[in-house]
Length: 266
Image 1 (cartoon, helix red, strand yellow):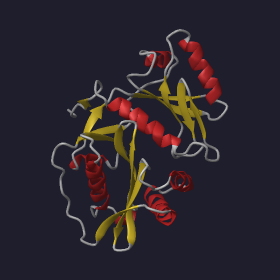
Image 2: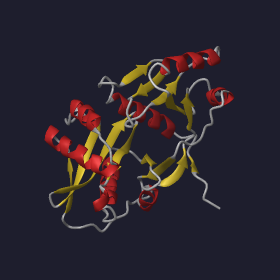
Image 3: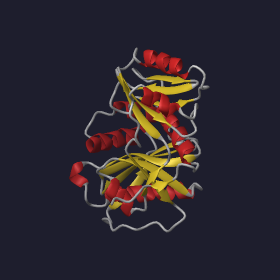
């Protein structure tokens, strides 16, 4: 039988994830064709595959919840035909998921959520001595980061340049970006987001030609070490199916943070 996920539903992590995700989406807020609503409901629409369309926070009283949901769907329908709705254990009302299920929406864990204890010794990886990691410090490096990320993800990501270059690279930046070089070739890239009471890794990618050489794992370990240096005892990540085995070798374990993802479409 498959191993059950670690139960972290009563921990602080769900609030961290919510705050971190909202901070991530806010980096893109105000860019062309991207719409944000931040009130008793937080939702973000990008009209693009990335960073995606999501409802990420709800704070309603239980009175008239059905009407509130219907009103929200009408508003969202002016922008998109479908959206992912992430319900966190501390959202209100506490039984919000039941109202969504009554409308035929099916909830699930929303993919591969993993957790790592940073208080233990991090593993080591053997990687080429010609590999090095540099933090993005200016727009020219940011353009290089985007090119490497596009090669890894296989899509156009100009909005990431616009968002991250606008955010900046100074000491007050909470979105930090890194490139792994093999010699002078960018072979992996990723982002560390320190916001919402926690820090996590986003946008980690390696172009197909450079996979299997340990570059992505080495960058992940470096970012995990940086998260620990910033004073965090643990971290979390959302993983693609392809990357799960890599993250598990680095100390991440399957975890259930109590959040549930629903999908709405017209």
